[in-house]
Length: 198
Length: 170
Image (cartoon, rainbow over all chains, first blue to last red; front, side, top):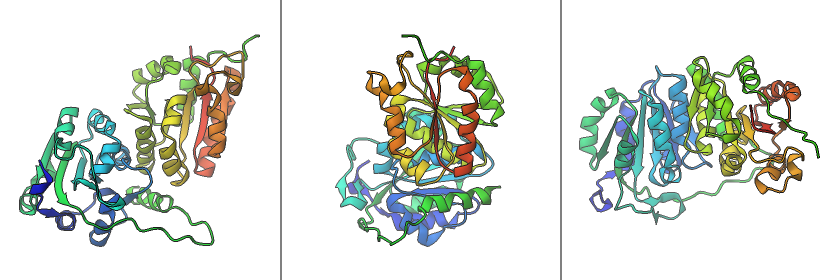
């Protein structure tokens, strides 16, 4: 699967997902956080920055704690590459309520679009299938994704959906430096999600 | 020199885990506490979840907490070094009450951990102090009240704590 065939934008994918958003806990990370935040965030959203690759196993913990709640992970190719072992951990746990969506745009978008390693040679879907995910899917165009996603949501997890997308192209935005120490975003965020799940 | 640390029975630690109401143990296998791992994998009332890396143990435990469970993280000192950024980003910045149980594999039981020659043993306590994470050393079974104290500290402060297992469990 090469990136020269890419037809989808991340923004278009987010709209497809947002139309199906109901009670899912959604764990997003890095580049995809901004477009997702504009479309479909609820009190069941967790946003992960500062520990690349950790979004999927945070979601795994939620999925194991709340097997009746569907969990979506909005992951990136660079992030997943940093924690490939998580594919084994997730496959071993076999959470039926778990959809791992990987936006594979072939670059480290926030740091200047440097290429990800082996981007035209490997497939995250193949890796996940080999690790023991229940099923995996790869999509190149938005129409096929849109028509398949309802059925895919009914599949027994864990499943991995690899989306060949184009880079968003928005780089790193330096944080402001306030006079007093702010509470980190995750510390504010997770108690609200926990409360929503009670 | 006589030993200052001796192996704590696995049953003693298992009972402490149960009495502190842990629902899950998230672990990377550790030679140091293998007798405890055997007990944990044989019980059904505490779920044993194995991860490929210590980074994943940290994030998975955080997810369990969000979902209303109470996990214990069981790793080795080398795993502590491996997961420092996740420990910082999740445990410290995220303000999760993460309780780590860390085996000091290879520790010379006649010396305090920081007086050991081996870097894996001697840097564990200083690293935790650098991260401002409270640590509790269990050298013998008489130190077990520290286990309860550590768990209470994590809950009270919404922050990580570390329970160091000074000698291999028996």
